[in-house]
Image 1 (tube, helix red, strand yellow):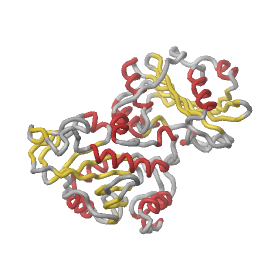
Image 2 (spheres, one colour; image 1 turned 180 degrees about the vertical axis):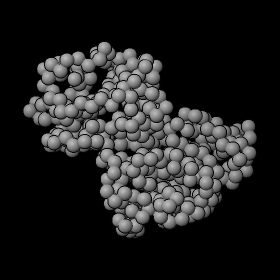
Image 3 (spheres, one colour; image 1 turned 60 degrees about the vertical axis):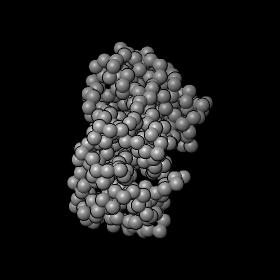
Image 4 (cartoon, one colour; image 1 turned 120 degrees about the vertical axis):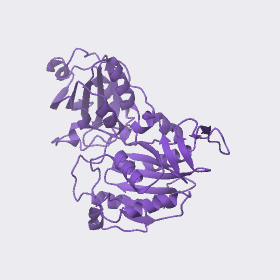
Length: 390
C-alpha cells in the first residue's frame, strides 16, 4: 500500500492507523491500494484521518479518541456508546461519537460516486480497547469499530472491501488526480498496488439511484441507508411469468432473458449482495427489453427475485429500494447489448412486490441522455411493473 500525506491527523489514534498501514509495506503483497492521510472532503470542516482507495472500495478510516483505555466498548452506529458498562458522555451527550465520521464518509461517497465504488467506514478507537461489541446489523452493513492493530485493521479492510475489483489502474489514476491533484501516479505504479490493468469485472458505472453509494448525503441520510427503505405496490404476476404476447402487445421487444436460478448473490453488489449471501433466494430472472416511447427508443432492465415467503421478500425489497444499498446487476453489465443503451446510468427506477416475489425495473433512453426523474422514463418504469414478461 502506498501512503500519501495530504494533511494533518485529526485524532491521536491516527498515528496507530498510519503505523498499521505502513507495516503492510508497498505493493499488493499484503493488501495494495493507496492511502491518503488527512484527505479533506469537499464541504467538510476537517480532514479524515485516512482514506484508503482500493480496486473494489473506498474505505474511510476515522479516529475516535476515548478518554481512557477500556476493556470493553459497546459501539452502535446509532445510540449510546458505553465503556466498561458506563455511558460515554461528551460535550453533547446526545451526539454519537460516530456521527462526524458518518458525515465524512457521506462526503467521500459523493466524491467517488461516479466510479461506482462502495464507501465503507472503519472507526479506529484509541488509546486501547480490549473488546468492541457492535450490533450485528452494523457488522452486516460493513461498519467496523476496532483498535487499529496491524492485523485487526488489515482483516477489517479486507472484510468490508469485498472480493471483486471495481476500477482499473487507469480509472484509479483519474480518481486520484481529483482526490490529490498535487500527486501523480503512473498506471504501472497503480498496477503494482493491485489495481487491474484492464477491466476484469462489470463496468464501474451503475445507475444513479444506486451510485449514491453507501453513505448518502449527511449523517441522517446514511443512517437511513443503513436501515432499510421501502418498495412500492404489488406485482400482478405472483403466479409466475405470463405468455410473451402480453409484453409484446405493449410494444416491448425482448432482447434477452436469463434465468440465474438461486445464484442471486452472484449477480448483486453492495449491501444487497451481502444480504443475499445470508438470505437464500429461490430464483432470479433478468430481462432486457427495448421499447418505443413517443418515438424515442428506451432500454428496460428487469429483475425478478423470488423468495420462500413474503417475510424475506419484504426485507429484500426494503433494502433494494434504499439509495446506496447496491442492487441486482443489470444484464448489460455482464454481456453486450448491440444497439441498446451503453449503461443504466441515471436510470429511472421503481419496484414492487407480490407475496414472495420482488420485481425491480430500470429505464433509460437509448442514444440520448437520461435522468432518474424524467417523467417519461418514470412512467415507463411503472408501466413495466405490471406487465407479464417472458
